[in-house]
Image (tube, rainbow, N blue to C red; front, side, top):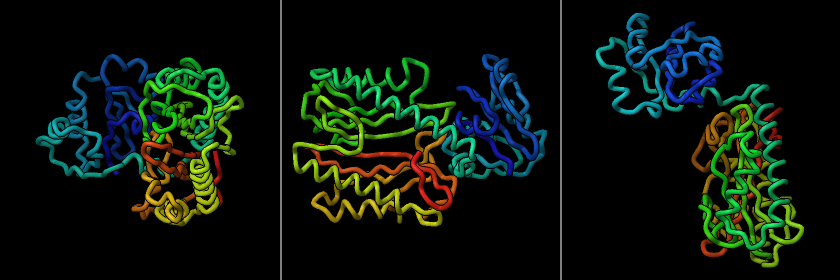
Length: 338
């Protein structure tokens, strides 16, 4: 299959290097990495298995290669190209452009042992950062969400050593009822519910983890939590049970939507029916959200080598939100927590 890629992670997967202005053409046994003079030197040092082409106009250079190649068709992901760039690329070329949505995600769906090892290392470093952040939080009574979000970024990245997988979520009490809450000026105090969702990158591979906890003098992000409010405790225990049952029930060969159903039915049979408002999980790799998507509509068959999150939640607007999230890999037909 002949194809063109523009997304940075898609290009990195193909040749071991990417930048913010590049195209990759894969034509039969040949690959071409096209970039501008700002990145040529580094590209020539790091690109693997592709010829580096320097050009001020990347699309013009790609057109020249395509014209000389005499190929008959070229696959592309329509999500990667603006209308203007695609119109310029295809203009007056005598070949068929074939839409291939999620082209790179599909190529990256089954992770190699090396990729799984990198993701596992990312998850390990992330878990260590969660422990350091919990220790810091014990000293932060009276501090705002906004300030604690800043502290979380510093601790997750080890003050710049690692990149974030995404902007972390730190939410207290009612603000946690928003699954992707923005930090507010709310102040942390003893007895509060705290939700923290964060992740880092290790050699470009992402991690993702969420914990919900009760804030007291022995605060930690362990999964065994005790809340003073019995309604919150019931909700927490349900989310924990839903996650455990989903991890236990995950199997290679099952449909993604059937895995989602395992957790969703546990919550929907309770007083919190309808309060699990997002999908059960998503794939993780070079992108923080990639295939497979574990939701109630996805018929995709899960296979060994797939890495994804399992993160049920309960959200009661104006009261509280609870989510527990871990990443798993399917190995020998079952889910293994990373």
